[in-house]
Image 1 (cartoon, rainbow, N blue to C red):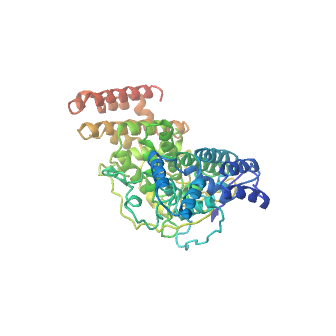
Image 2 (image 1 turned 45 degrees about the horizontal axis):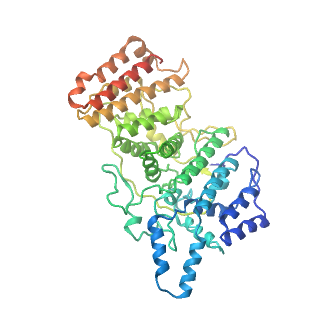
Image 3 (image 1 turned 30 degrees about the vertical axis):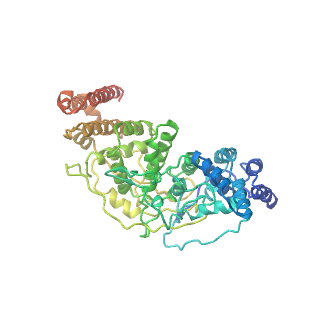
Length: 525
């Protein structure tokens, strides 16, 4: 049974033929600012833009400015001998390139449309994966007359929205874009990826980063669509998640199994976290928050997602980790996930018996498809059996109240659709205390990261307990708070006398700060 994309807003009507032609005429004549102005005037909450127009807006919004090297090259080309026809052709292409003012106008209009129109009405122009991986490729081509419309059609060659954000996806001049992602022909288009052991493989300047310097605005716009989408799903009575974001993760080949390949969105998120600017770093937090909300459904493989995030967290700096944990929204879903993530990264298992954490098993790479429109319906039963197996074997309790329904039991939401809510694996207070008190590695880098994870484990577990009703909280947790057991555990784990010999002054200050913060938080639990 499929969930229809929920929406409480009135239906949006299509543009009339006259309105569409008015915008097309300005685009065809290279009057991009005029076209964007007209499009802004005729669209509203009751009227949605034409998909081809959205695609052209995205293309213009991604168009890079003229660099110093490009300026020098253009000046040199003017001095090169050539036939009059070549010179005219070169000048014509240059005149059709979007100006910086047009780029800014496109970015602003995209943001405005994200506030006034339904996310699914805008996401129809964004490349995404089909729900069914067995479906054939959609090879439908569109006839376009204008230069900018033809250039924008190349967005359809991308498999998902993460590819259009990559550095070098759109370039200036006649070869605006690198080769199709499906058939890479150069080192530049094949080497940009994240390695869990070595971090970003960017040893040369040819490696494209996950988000180009001029793609941050489009990433912000995409996240706004996903956030508005998940809010609409929640208002319709479902657990909070974005079907549009789910369509940006390739489906599994096996029928009715959860999606699991989240490498590309995690590349984008952690690349954003490594930036200096707060605006860019916050985009990484927002994307990770959206992905975590997907884990509250049976549509995403929780164990594979935990493995992927844990690998990156374990290789991140303490500063990056602290920023991420402190910036994530303090919701029950995210608190649950942070408890599981800290347990996983610290080496905990489902039984908490001291065994090393299980390694991620290799899986067949999912076949990726292209589609030109976003299907708002998602399979409500996808992954129910697999998720139920993943959740089995968890001992103890985080509390029964406020927990999603079990994956193999479909509840009915406010709109009558079946629920895809997941019941998270449970962890008992005794398990948390055992993992918190477990001996850590002795080198300075490991000590700082491990103690940061342990501090977050306690803080997130406390938040989970606080969000439960008084009768649903784990009695052992309350006993530990009142009899001093938890305080003694914190004193022991963060004892500077035990760790100072293997740490530097900066790490010792971090340990002292974490310890004081925990004691302050415990006074309010």
